[in-house]
Image (cartoon, rainbow, N blue to C red; front, side):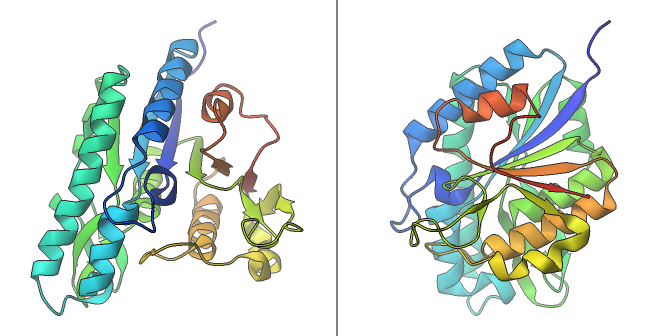
Length: 270
C-alpha cells in the first residue's frame, strides 16, 4: 500500500542561515547543505510534500530595526529597503535549493499580506496551493507587510506558517535554528542549560519562565514569542506537532524528515 501524502513545513531560521551580528552575510555553506538534505529526504520519501520558509536574519532585521518598520515607519523608504533586503536573502536561498534540484517556487508574502495591529489577517492562499498541487515546493519568508493600525509591520515566517497551517493542515512543522531546541537557559551562555524535550501546548504557562530572547537583532521576537505562537497553533490545528531542532548538525534535518519519532530537539504537542 502506498504511503499517504504527508505535508511538512520547514523553517530555516535567520540566525541559522545568516550571521545575525554582521549585515547582509549569508551562510551559504549551511544553506547548501540543508538543501541537499531536503533533496535526499524527498528522494527517500516520494509522498513527502514540503513547504519551506526562512527568516531574514542579518538582511531584513537590521534594516527593519533602523527604520522601525515593525510598528510603523517613520521613513517609508525603510519599508522598501527592508523588503528588498528580505528578497535578496530569499534569492540566495532559492538559488541554493534549485541547484540542489529542490523545485522551490518563491512566493513574496508582502504582495498579498495584510496585518492588523501586528497580526497577519490576510495572505493569498491560491499560489501556495497551486505550487503544492504541481508537486513543487513553496518557499516563503519573513517580509514587510502593510498594517491597518500601525501602517507597517513585519510578517514573521512563523506568523506566515501559522496562517497557512490553518488552511493547509500540515502534519508537522520543523523550526531549525542554531541550538538543539528549547533549553532551560541559553546554552550558548550557560553550560548547565538543559534541553526541554517536550512542551505540552495546553500547559505552556508552566514553561514560560524557561523561554528567553534571541542573540543578534530580531525584530520579530525571540524564543518565547516563537514557542507561544506555535503552541497556540498546536492547540488550534488537530494532530499538528511542532519540533525545534538544530540546523547546524549535519544530516539531522534529513533524519527528522524521514523519521518523526526521533528523540531530538523540542517537540510541542497538544
